[in-house]
Length: 63
Ligand SMILES: [Zn+2]
Image 1 (cartoon, rainbow, N blue to C red):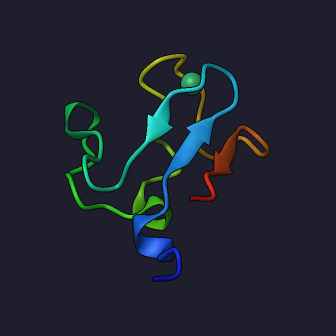
Image 2: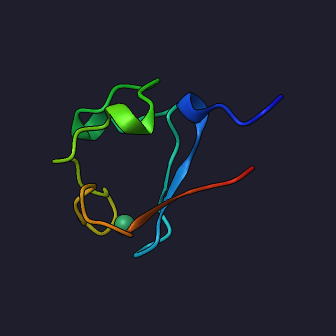
Image 3: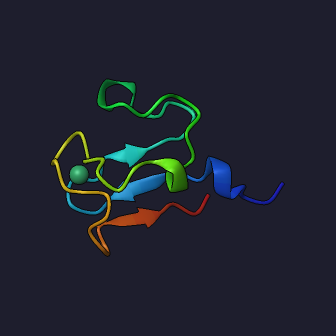
């Protein structure tokens, strides 16, 4: 099965926290099941607080 964009995980290159769409980030207003593209640009990494919209910070994980 090819990697589905909807289920792709993304890693924060600042702190190595991983965003998993299956879990989302409910504490910060992102419900479980939210694909990365639907996470608001104003969302911040829960670990290092960097903004999602900062370029080059988050990288898609290739499974
Ligand atoms: Zn981070």
